[in-house]
Image (cartoon, rainbow, N blue to C red):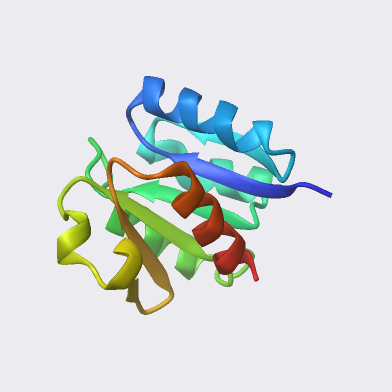
Length: 124
């Protein structure tokens, strides 16, 4: 059974490409939300196994969305992988992944193989 990934990012072209690449593997069912203000409602409806979340977005930023998801009793255990252009691979820990509590942070642009491995690891 495919694992459910919710991508929350305001860049529609980026999210569409990411969805196509992740679904091509056959491992993931992907839903996109390009409006951060609707992210919590999308997560409640979709019940993802993992949320892929951009940090810088208009409206609510990634930290706000992550806090909403973690505060929701039905979603509080959902792993969150943050994507950001604010850090470069050299600024994060080994293999461009940094642990921040229950969050994982990956720099943009992200390598698809690294992202897929990170999603698998986050889901467990």
